[in-house]
Length: 275
Image (cartoon, rainbow, N blue to C red):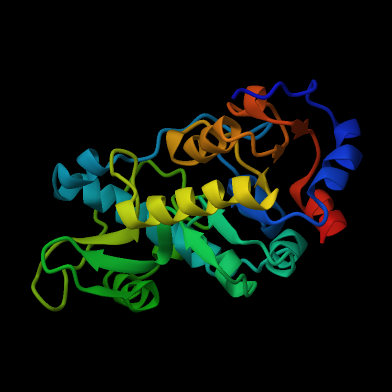
């Protein structure tokens, strides 16, 4: 059943908070939650248009992978220094049935969030596409530093993106190491555009959302435009089950027509009030 939201607005924060308090919650978070940690979002007000590398492009050859890793080496060097903000800490205190994050920055983990699904993986992990060995990103970062001395210093002013990428056109000469175990192709252990989210993660999230229908619970979405289906599908499932949906975001989202309340306010402000 489709729910009809009131017009998006900041004045809806109070009734949205009243609706959520005391209910079992599933929380879905997006890049807007991490902006207060210094990581820009994808589609918030003022965000520049960008086209992330697809999985198919990454597989297309060494030049594409050089471009990816040259940028990601700079971005992750900064992202790993970001700290959880008060919004992340508030989510950790909510005691939600499940927190589903579309973010790959690892800040929910560092905030101590229990019952977490990192839908798109974590940028702090690396996987070999040939032997499937996983390894810490920090170890790869050291290898990249050794192969590309001075890279950070020469590109200190480039803009970081939410996925750990940066805005950089000239990546010529950047050296990319192979898997130490088999010599295969290394990739961050995150879901690229063009890849599917692992089925077990999706099923766990659907189960949590569906359980809300039996417990008078609610789905809270914070900091996501819901532009891609990986997050929107959970809003659709909740609405179909008559589970209340609250969306908190700066700017309209694709899920607004399905929401009980669509609140135009900051994630940290709303979450700290709720927690």
